[in-house]
Length: 78
Image (tube, rainbow, N blue to C red; front, top):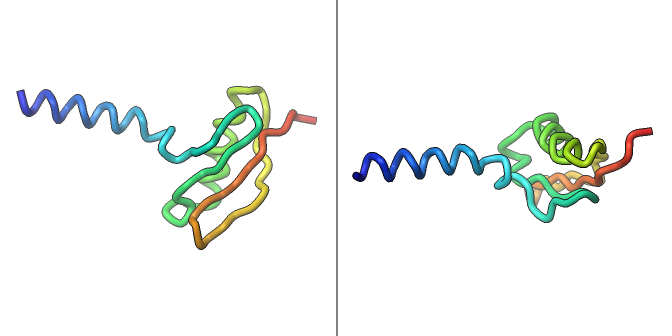
C-alpha cells in the first residue's frame, strides 16, 4: 500500500512539474520561477511552451537574479 502511494505521488509530481515553474501565467504572459536553477535558455523555452498554447511566442520582459525569476509576455507572431 505504501509503495502504491509513493508511486502515485511520484507520478503526480512528475506530471505537475511543468506548472510549478510558472506563476501568474495566462494568455498575456507570466513568470518563470527558478531561473537560477535553470539556464536562461531553458526558462525561455518554458515561457515559449506556455505561450504556444495560445498560438503566441514569449518575449522576455526582465530577468531578476535576486528573485530567480524571468517575466515574459505572450506576443502574437509577426
